Image (cartoon, rainbow, N blue to C red):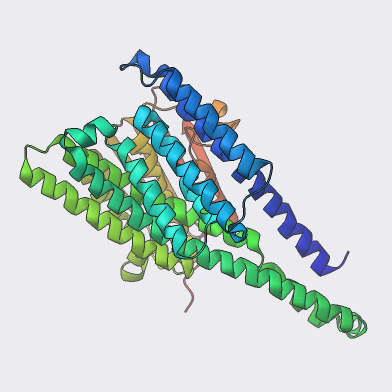
Length: 424
């Protein structure tokens, strides 16, 4: 099999997997919203009743009719506009009747990217963000009861961050299409020069290396890890600060502090997202050494989450290769994020150990813990993307990630990577 054919098959394989996820995800999110709505009477008043279920079913039929039977593309013009407008109307109705359907609003961003083009994509983002914000503030009744400032602020923040993400995704999409076009042109050229390429094995090997380095799979994995570690965590932090501000509206100074923190997180997320698109390391590592960067991360995390957290550095702390330092910093970020989300810990201890051949980062908490054997079957830590991302990072550098935990006994995460010195 020729090199070009193998690479095209690799492209097609990943595109098929991506299409399956894109096709199934809206129904899963809609089902999740429905389940939450049906369970709502367990902790709150029932929402919507038969009207909600009927609208949810109609929404599923609408998506299947326009996107399932006949995949909607943005070059279909008027048909895509009709489909997307109907989807937004149904989504708004579901959120108004039952705020639990806020989880389904992610479909709006996904289909805006798939179905719309140009400036209309960002219009779709703004509309989706406005609908999602209604869910985040507790429903339309809360907005009408005086919470419209909260709604407006959340909708604006989400629109800005989602718009930035769309911009970077468009750049990545154009890059992917350029790679495919380049691959096609390379195939045509190779057909004309097949005899010459057969005589020049060295050039052939270099072309293979260049083509593989330009492959989509590694780029998409890198983007997924970086977006998870920057935008996703930034959005979670912003939402937490906005919720805290909402709960302290009677204390103006406290509200201002939370809003200032939220804006700082938004700026940092946008900066990191731009650096991600250009394959640049985190800004904090460009300004300080790894121990200082992790120490600053621990300090800020401890202040934001009111948890006692400390960092100890052992061994000869020396500059490491950029990929090594990025992997360890991101591991520390994700581990602390998991502690804040799931552990309910009172104390977290981080240890950064420089040894002759390896560098190790240990993160231990005294929180709730979990059963790592049960979680291993799903391939995720406490149901999230975190452990997968951390393990991919360290394994990509020929390292290893170990997790020790038990229910009620806290959690220990240890990332070990080769001690590759910084390039001179």
